[in-house]
Length: 371
Image 1 (cartoon, helix red, strand yellow):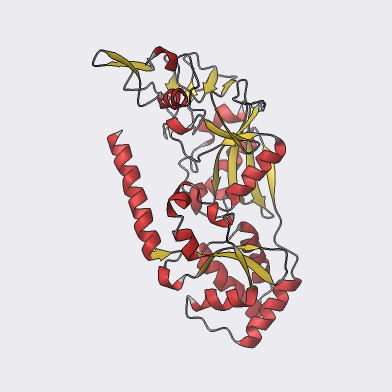
Image 2 (cartoon, rainbow, N blue to C red):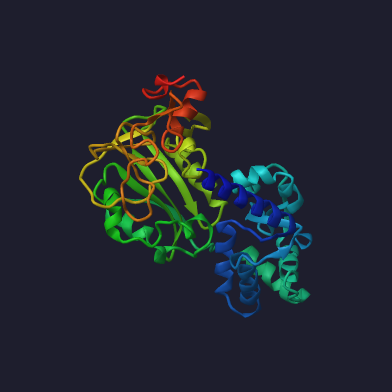
């Protein structure tokens, strides 16, 4: 646990240091898809679109002093784009670390003409754009209605395996590109593909059937709210699309994971209809499997292997292994409660979800057994 904590502190320190000194240019999927449609036009317009796309998608580092506007998005005005000043994001660095999509929704966003953004982004690479080239680009931008259709699809069965494959991803960036399950074989996903009525995959795909984001959706038996559908951790190429998944869940009446990580203590925190909710989530399974994927939230498999939960239980298996194994907690050997210095306490490795709920005044069958 100490190693894990030190690793977390190191990553946060690296984030803060590099955010102060250097940065990337970010944009929403809609912004990028429109640039891709202009890239197909060819000529000078296509070249400019290609250069701007490469600045964004290559994740090139630029000195922070050069980055003035960032986090671009489309707006209603055809010749304008949305942005936020980089300095405002730096002032909210802690919040952005915990909520990377925040810069696309935070107050203080403005609008600027697309022509100015062409000059600004191209200047980061010392690329000169003439007045006539910029004017031609702006005219095509304003007249373009093709933003390369991108939409949500809810898939199940073998299609879950299909869209988990990294070869179906738009690119290798973001949490989607770094997912530990992106290159696993189909057999490890049988718990998903053979429980078609209980598990589905929400994907955000473009016209070329490339995935820009995904999230598991569970039909649950036990829920902390009135909804019986839970959207799990969201994986995307771009942080801005996390908000789109949340909006989709809200429209469907689902509850979703509050913090997009796999930490056991956060696995009991959710959002439903814009309100925080907390508690146990549980579902029944069909089938017995030899291999299991790494599961972020519903990561505790019952001892009889017939149900999943976000909370540990007696002799359950913890599905936080990237090699397909199911393992009992090494610290408490599946007992949930350990005896340290003669006192009963919740296991710090597998049962911190019970502890989180206890601190919130929510009782479980295990946290009520300890002081």
